[in-house]
Amino acid sequence: MKYETTIGLEVHAQVLTKSKMFSGCSAAYASAPANTVIDEVSIALPGTLPVINAEAVLKAAQTGLALHCHVAEYCEFSRKSYTYPDLPKAWQITMYDKPICEHGHLDITTSAGETRRIGITRLHLEEDTGMLQHGDASHSLVDYNRAGVPLMEIVSEPDIKTPEEARLYAQKLRQIVVYLGVNSGNLEEGALRFDANISIRPAGQQEFGTKVEIKNMNSFRNLERALHYEIERQRMVLESGGTLYQETRGWDEATGTTVSQRSKEHAHDYRYFPEPDLPPLLLSREWVELRRAELPELPDAKLARFLSEYGLSEQDATLLSGERETAAYFEQVLATAGADKAKPVANWIVGELFRLLKDGEETLADVATRVTPANLTSLVEVVANGEIGSTVAKQVFEEMYRSGDSPTAIINAKGLRQISDSGVLVSAARAAIEANPKVVADYRSGKAAAIKFLVGQVMRSTKGQANPQLAEEALRTELDG
Figure 1 (cartoon, rainbow, N blue to C red):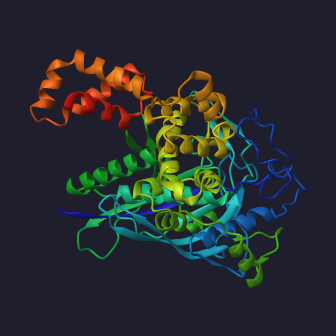
Figure 2 (cartoon, rainbow, N blue to C red):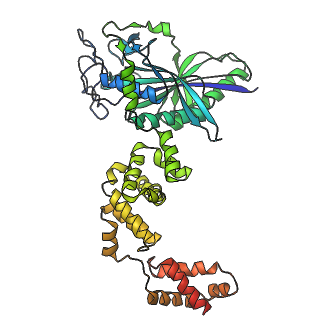
Figure 3 (cartoon, rainbow, N blue to C red):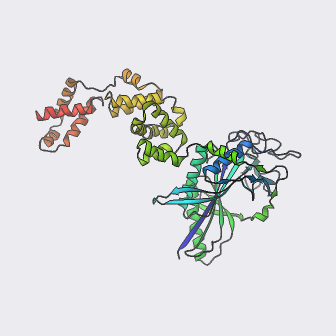
């Protein structure tokens, strides 16, 4: 029997603010010793009262606008009651039936080239929980450093059909929140976390299947793997005559399986009611439009502009617009080099610069003080002027990447300037001809491509410094003479 898959994602994105959601305590907890970034509010001491973080509200509204959501004029916080030890007051302050943003969407493009629109049900604000550290069977520890950090929960419609679409949606969402500067995008530290709701049903059936929630997926790869596994597990249960139950399952990366954790709670289990210690939020249309005006150029718009304005290839434009920092650096270089140099500048960035960054541990921000816009512009110019060839240029780029010296200084210090002296080139051409009689015979018998091998030998003997065009001319003169 064929089955249809229905997937919805709940993405939890920590909001980059200096303080926590409802107190002035620092939100920078990631590298702090356990239970050192806490205050009276985050550990719920008696008599403490929450105060709304205005910066978190602003960034949540901007995120909603970037996701084509409607920003509500009236929204409020509620208490979500539950007794897990990661929130000491036994409830979480969150938004329930009156969220800050609703009815948005995100477009993705699948590997088959199909554009799919994924609806976004809501985006709401809440406080993050503490973190449990499980020891042996006798005990667990809790660290409250994370408790109270501002958190956006972004809930999709059940529009996702495949694990690939779920991964693409999550990756696109990460790209947008990082572009906006509202989230670090760091999955390893838990700044961005995914829960998936998934069900299957016989093809053609209108009614949804039994929904299962999957937690603990800390990477895009694990998100896709967990969904593939769960689809197959549910299919096997149904085809063996079994029954699926609404439950929460955890992803076990080591075994590549999902494991049952608890039966799935319903909204009434949490006993939501309006938070009595916080006023509702009233967001004027003028305030919302100011937030809209503050939005940066987003990835899709930047990609389209890079294609139309600079004439880049689809691949280069995608790579250069993928991260806001990379796009900004590219355009900083063009501000120095000129827009007509877009293609060679793009080649250096997506080629040598990306390669060296991948091989090392530095970020683009770290190396941009060495591979400055002025230095990269200078390198493009000396290549265009024929002062050095492409092979030597790569050597110069790597030296510039390491030292921060200008291309001209490196070329002069190492004597790398391209050889155009006819006497030197003729001598090198004669040596290549004498050392390769078979290739010479091939050339003279009509195999014109043989000349390329001889040019390579001249380049090799001159350590890449010969002007390739002049070297080929010298070889043809000697061979045809």
